Length: 228
Image 1 (cartoon, rainbow, N blue to C red):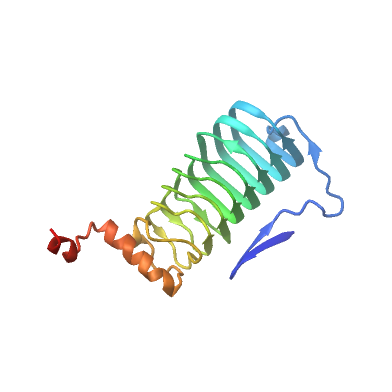
Image 2 (spheres, rainbow, N blue to C red; image 1 turned 120 degrees about the vertical axis):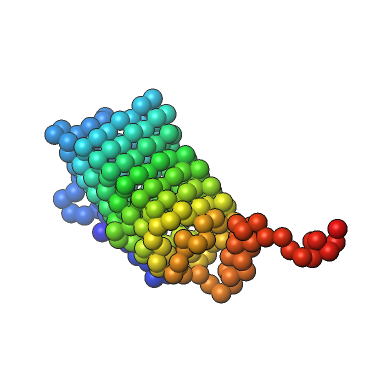
């Protein structure tokens, strides 16, 4: 297995160069008897993608486009999602392990009751998404991704790292965030600061948090009143 490490957080990723592993080209993600293993799926342009009760293991999905995507009760182990565009994504009641999403568009996605364990989101767009009760059971990294106006609702992002991401109007609505590493980001437009207990930041980011808190509390500065 390969690893990706940023500061103290390391994620275990798929490694398809292991001896005896060969990826076979497939024309559908619907595996026989609900299982799809050692596969490669590329350049599909779908109107609808509906998958349920499927176990995907050791695979690479590249250039997949779907106008509407519904994924339910999936188990995803050691899978790469590369340059995928999954519009109107609804992903529920699933577990994703040792997997990477790279250069993917997941804008406006809805993830609910999804468990993440050793997952990397790199150069992805998750703007306007809602992640409800998403739980990090192992290390998770969001790197160089856009989370603009994304909402984490009742999420558990313990041991998660967010680095060099767009966090404009990103909201944290309840949940557990102890140990969430927010260093390397601009935090001045975060929302839901009261949920972010015991997170990790740099001292230089304290002024940014103060700006975010003032905006959230709709604070009026006395100097502005005096100038009127």
